[in-house]
Amino acid sequence: MLNGGGVIGPGTGARVYLACGTTDMRKSITGLAILAQEHLRQNPASGAVFAFRGRKGDRIKLLYWDGQGFCLYYKILQKGRFPWPSSGDAVARLTCAQLAMLWEGIDWRRPSWGAPPARVG
Picture 1 (cartoon, rainbow, N blue to C red):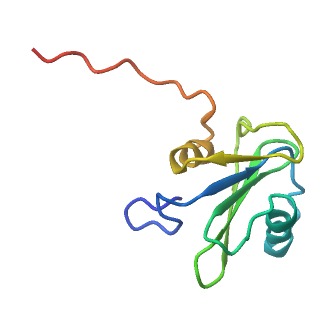
Picture 2: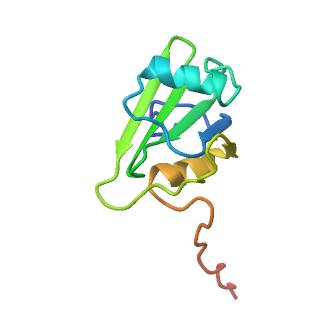
């Protein structure tokens, strides 16, 4: 989803804001842009990515301004839930790497790192 070899989306340096708690997934682009401005206190047309999760935890929406208009990415997991902070009105900043993990359903808060590479010798 996120820019990695010709894929549509923000670049690797994009700021990412996650709306903690739950969001009504019936909200349109306009409704999410208002949330970004009023609750997250960010300019929705700033080029940042804004992430919102539904009540059940199995769906997220990402809102992004690409310079010409808003893009809305929507994903529903067939199994599991997206990892998400529960503190209602708060906002969390994520790195682009954390956003990529989130999009794949990986717990970006506690990623499981593999063993370091063995010495070559």
